[in-house]
Length: 197
Image (cartoon, rainbow, N blue to C red; front, side, top):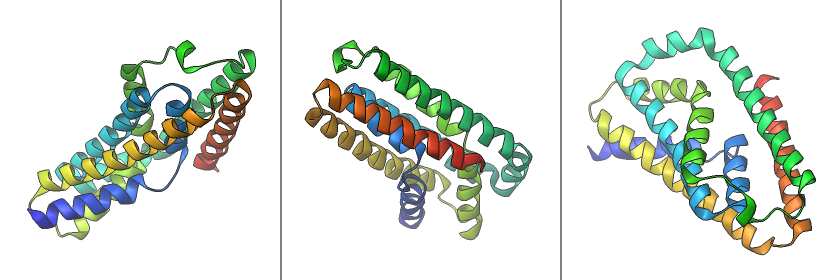
């Protein structure tokens, strides 16, 4: 039980900690809106990681083999969605540079569902978890592995959201928010292109 849980924790941090487009999106969303919205977005990403950990525990290599043929189209879809989000964020910031937390209409539920869906477009995560599960020799404790992976991912995503919210408190001026939105959009666009290049 303890070994499976710790393996899940390590796996969860392993998949969540590398900063990618999702982390930038969560931090930027949290900075522009509120910690509640950013935390909901982070929990959406952690839920996707938990779902993929569960899929890996239940189906392992068989499911990874099924996903492999559609991995490229899913990466292209994820890149397209990220580019659209980057463009929308930049356009919104330029169209209304005085945007504040109060004028952003993003709800926690919308942030959760949006980031959950976007994170699920990354099939490499299930392959990563499947490799780890198979590497452990299919030992028991699958539920503990999944719980550990989810909790580790959630704790990291909440830290990212909290950091974004903290940055947002210091960037209260219209110019600072405009710069933050444009930088965030640029980073997301670069990371999106990196998915398919």
